[in-house]
Length: 236
Ligand SMILES: [Ca+2]
Ligand SMILES: [Ca+2]
Ligand SMILES: [Ca+2]
Ligand SMILES: [Ca+2]
Image (cartoon, rainbow, N blue to C red; front, side):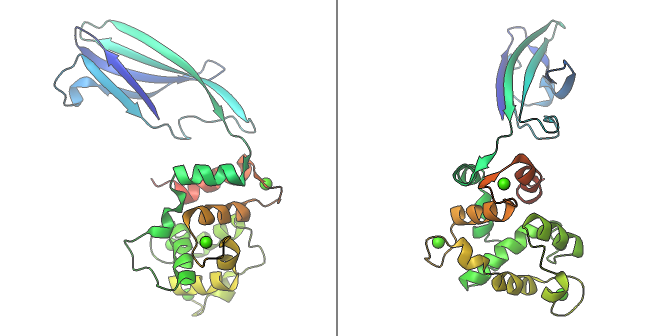
């Protein structure tokens, strides 16, 4: 997230935000006409915006890249002034500890306390249900063949087949079919590190770490977490 305060004593017309990469490619990523924002004064404007991957494309294979953020302000008399700052974008390999720490900041475990739905009472079923919500990307309350294939690939379940989970053979999984399958995999006991029969949110994120670490080197490389994070944890 970036936050910039722009001040002009004559009154601001527009604020523009550019991103420039290390090859000097400059792209306008946002513009704000102060007239569109109700405020008591046009002499001061707060820019607050979140940056998403689409706006900051880290070059393929790069672990680090440098960017310049340029904020340009235009006042009512068409005077333009600029200010900028540089930042580094990192995509480091993450240890389990770091991933759990980041997961708690990003509230990755919130699937575990999703109260909008009727969550099954049995702890292992409610855990399976949390995973179900995570995998059901189009929110139709069924796991389709495409959702299943992605889940099986991402969570390293190459030996599993949808057909064996699909009790009524309709090609999709209901929540109860999915939960039964998850229970058979022993995820629940594997993820419950302190064996108190509850998967808390750090155990939930830790369990995801273990499933995503396909090469079992104890680290999540960018290729192991980036796309999956955007799939399962970024809500659009
Ligand atoms: Ca679905
Ligand atoms: Ca089914
Ligand atoms: Ca526990
Ligand atoms: Ca790894």
